[in-house]
Image (cartoon, rainbow, N blue to C red; front, side, top):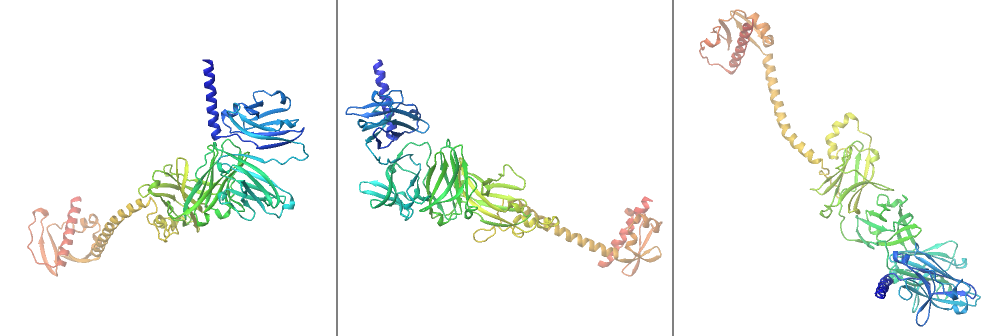
Length: 621
């Protein structure tokens, strides 16, 4: 039973090792050479998985039937190598080294460095040569790079090669095919992924390779001169292993003229990265556009921003106002203990931006400004925002739900428009503003608008006169225009309230005008009546009396007409007639009807008014 369990465990370990080996092979030098009596150091790389870090590491010597252990991390050392061999593991770096000293000729052989059980786990074959000297050939430099990762290679040659061609080529069956050189030649398979940069002193240069693929594994040469004819070269052995904990993201990004792109660059959040930047690849270098340290190229002002998120190991670069010249290759680069580089290709395709609106707006200090940003249906469920651009980032402005006084972001979902409104614009409001969308923590499309603030502050006594104008913004210098220069009258959510006010005003204004006209007519008629003087006879006394003398019937009527209740005489149309009126008006006989003109009827009405005033005065007396 114990034997079966042991066999099962061996089978499990073999299967686990085979699984790891298929995707994460161990890597080391193909050949090392040491001088007789001297020493050699072999460095072997392995994937930094939890299993590999804690598993047994070994160095064994191949024979016809098996690989015999020389030394292992379990503490075993073969008798022939006792005191001559050591093994050291660096699990955090994914490296273990074997050092063999006091070399003898019989040490020349094929060996393996590996993890797990001999011949059943991860292993890599290494040839050890022992030379009598006096010179030892230079060994190839090893580069162990994760899939999608990057590598920096320094090639140093003498100053005598300062003016010679510098190059990198890849060894193959038919020779060494050029990858890149200082003449501007770049292999199509490496375009946008490799750079050559001259260094000091003369004759030295650096090679940068990024977005490494599995097929990039192989032997390369960096050199000065012409391979196989003249100059000097150095061998490079690059191995790309498959497993990586860092996501890669898409390597091709599409954009349209006038639109924007958002690119996520990934790095290991466990790493210590002090510098992160975005550069545009060229054959002779990578032009740095923006960094996380608030440095950028002036020509990209208002067009580019970098958001860093160390918690999830990403920094996002957003570029807008795209032009045809923006097409090309770009690099995401982090500089730290383990430098990372990745490449992205930006293609400009036919199409229209998703976010639309005025790109430039002029305003006068103290006026109301509303900036619209229209979005398509596909962004209906996305988060929308306005932010003010700075070289350090784009600071998000408060949303309408939070309702900040003086500066409001409001979204009209029916019109699919996001508004940024300033109640009273001030000089410091001038600058770039971005409208954007995001989804599940990832930045999406953006649109940039530049707000220009002109003029002096509006006086307090003039604000009321400009209030109706500032709502639309067209007469006070606020001129939001579309591409055709047409002013947009529906540029703010408050326009609906203004429209309602206009409707109410259009109804009330005519009514007010009519009432005013009627009041004017009444005043004019009243004035004419008050200014007219009529001839009135009281009893047998005839005199001219003005209507102004009867302003107060209590003061005048009770005294001047006291005792005149039985009869009144009124001159009508120049004819004297007596109308007898009893003290009680209700019992008076109806006078005979006389045909009168309109003037006479007016006089009768006025006389009646006087009689009624007298009666009231007498009654109160």
